[in-house]
Image 1: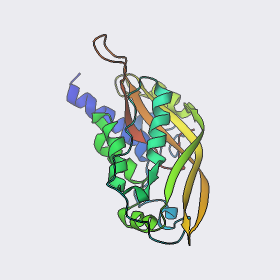
Image 2 (image 1 turned 135 degrees about the vertical axis):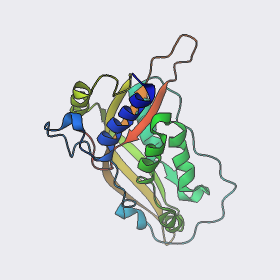
Image 3 (image 1 turned 60 degrees about the vertical axis):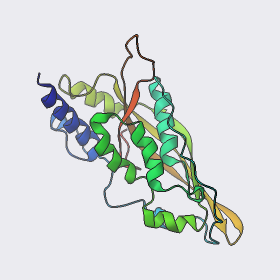
Length: 228
């Protein structure tokens, strides 16, 4: 098989699963809607409203980069680390949304890097929303409640043509709670909401001469629209 053609077929598959298009191989299986992907109409509506309203943050020291996603060969462990990196940020750190997005980009599989960048942007506040949230010293973190391989993924694997899904690819649907803290007129406040989403990853078995740190990030579903 022509390698270039094979790569194009793989990209079409993941675009269909994570991007909201009806996957031709799965037509008639009732999975459209389950396989919808990231919205492209801007950040979550709550991004523009801080959990706290208030005093501008004091000047911070020179920011350091966010923690990178650890190199792991454990698929579930890697999916958990991706989820934490996606939802953990601090507007008072001096960093920008692009700095947090870069952490996810560094963990991306090269075959889906451009599409993944679009996925990640839908999870992070826009630069304008970030500037507003910064005045409230808003921070965000994630508590994970469950990480499971969705049944819809098994159906997708069963119906995909040979070679369409990369060896070692899998999906994990994550449910948890997003927590935001901030300052309202010198008083600390917190707001929480449930979140759910699906992480698509690939973990290829390493050759003997390589380290076992082969998991890479493929795509993300839309927030609140995971595979089930």
